[in-house]
Length: 416
Length: 92
Image 1 (cartoon, one colour):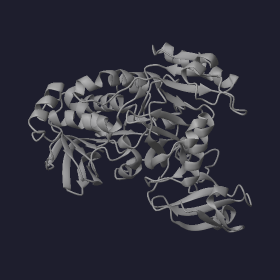
Image 2 (cartoon, one colour):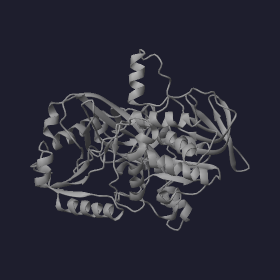
Image 3 (tube, chains in turn brown, yellow):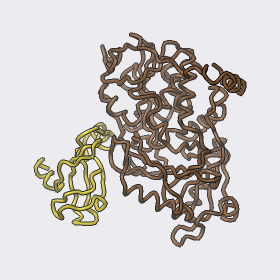
Image 4 (cartoon, helix red, strand yellow):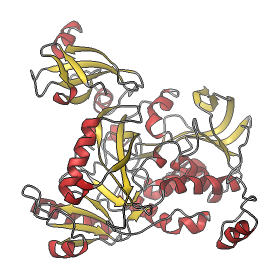
């Protein structure tokens, strides 16, 4: 069923009883040409582009829980392409362009809102670094704008401009950045992939990867053995566990990142704003809740819950940046398990096993990358060839000595 | 994460006094070791879901480096040992 204003009216007039489920609940077949492990944003997008762009049939996505039960439904919904390094920026800009056409393509309202993202700076050195990053963006054809204090005061009068330790001097604006409804992205890709014949198999946990003569022949799952021609891993925080089933040695640590939402407020914050003196970021959802988060907790964790000390730290950062937040009540907080890579950048890559492909290392930037990650991973799986914008995101860049370290933090995942 | 850590030198202390560095199973290779050995040390992590040994420093206490064994899913803490005694036991 195609979604449109007409379909809403027609269903409303007939009592809303004729809506069909957005996707099937198929039984697993004995063999698929391609299996994707992980039914989150990236896995679903990969399956969709495999079918849509590369014409593959006979694809399955295996998900141990329900579709979109992991990080795609746990993030702070920010979409942007304001990176600096040449290994990253073209990839994220490719993603941004896919975002801009995604809703029409998927026939699904992902509530993309290009409200602008502003990174605040607090000293001369940081301003110079932002100018450099803005120029790096322009070199890839991505508009960026440096805002001075006066311009910022007009736009965001509620900021704490005259904080004694971290005065706000200005910000770097990417106007095309913004937010999207995270769940809708997963659902949109799931529905579109299903309509192209992809089997989305939920409650199907992969427990082993069967190999013969050095190639993958299929996966052991909680619903029995399923054979495959090619296997793609998009397991995010559980990448190391799935990779271990194929004896992959991975530069990944799993860490917990928390996020928060407040009670609904009238429109107050029109942009996505990030704090330069910490790692705090905030936006307001269409429902009115302020959605925000900050750093990872800083220790390895597979638990989707965080630590109170980090909660306190995040609140302190928020109130330092916007004093008015101190009167707002937090509604919920939650955690997600991040696949932190050793340089803070993602991996879309071949592996030492010929028909096994890897998509991981999204740290806490995976949501914005969802469309490009799916597209480039599908390209890699279908053609056995790296997509040009993802050519730096190889697994072997670490041993070759070509990390993409956006923050210059070194191989220490809890610092990225 | 457990709220209280039993420091072998200072007794039971809130975990906010500690700073967590990461994987304690890694052993720094010889300077002349192969590139592969160095890559394994610098980049490759076992990242288990379950028991994990980690280097912690008791920053707001004795400032000793400790090895904390804990579960990365339940956050249960099994043992806290001074890092130097762990190294001595391992013959390093």
